[in-house]
Image (tube, rainbow, N blue to C red; front, top):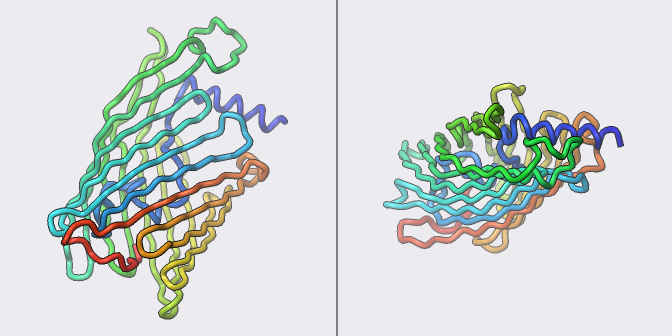
Length: 304
């Protein structure tokens, strides 16, 4: 009970002072790096679309919920890529809705590839403060609805081969602020920096192992690290384990249906250093790959 009360106070403070300083959280980013890096646009030389739903800390009132729909394709003989991403992120009474178009240019370096990406769009920040139950109902910070839209730009780069994958990105370069009242200014967003790496180990023709790491940094917080280890069987079935800062542990499973469709599920358990094991997190992803253009590769499985 005490832990739930402290978390409720925490979410209220976030609502007032620094409403949306964190990016949406994902666990299946390695299966769709476009979520954090625009340089992935068209990188697999197909048309790819995906939808994901994440419920963090299920059972806790006001806990984060994220819905993402995105698609991207390679163009101009696979030298360029373009995509579109729509995200809805809800935390308590606050929500962010963002729409980004992405673009990437790819360099073929003889069995290695370097991709540079940009993204641009808008982010709508909305706070339904009337849904809260403050101590002072007349406090102007807790009345009415706050709604503002800000421009957003991001950039990233990816270097990869059949064996490894390295990426760096800043998906949203612009820091966003807004005024709640004539005297109160809130930070809506602080830019986040990402670095991601993965390596494929071929045990035999049927089994591949893939360790990976994701580092995330933002001003005012300690560096966050995701450590992952997954195994792939017959290029169709994947299972893995991961930890986020050793405060959360999770299981990941993914299945390919034919060459076109894939389904993934993540189950996470936070420790008592976070919110406690009874508030588990769940993430579902459904994706599709299509070879729509003559220049698109066949739908044979790629490592990244």
